[in-house]
Picture 1 (cartoon, one colour):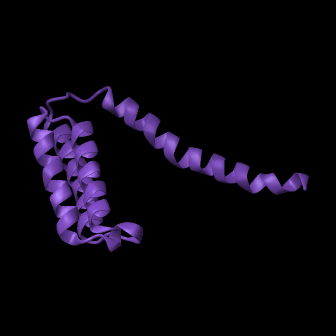
Picture 2 (cartoon, rainbow, N blue to C red; picture 1 turned 120 degrees about the vertical axis):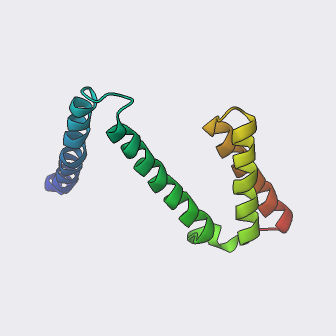
Length: 112
């Protein structure tokens, strides 16, 4: 019974090594970058594109419980959330809360 915990330690250490080293290297490299450099603008653009691609995939091709909701409701919630984002001065939290509430109310109204 005492030897059953070692796989969890190996997983934790391997996970830490795989991610923390890259974080520290990113911090070291990031301190040397100019915030207005073309390289950093490119990195931000790629990161934003990746986040938007995952978001679009979740909206158009969802899995699990979200897949049972109609596409028009998911698109409506995303659109209203984006409008709230713009109206609120580009606050991400407002967009997330608004689109979640719209989706939840729509699912409740449809009887899901």
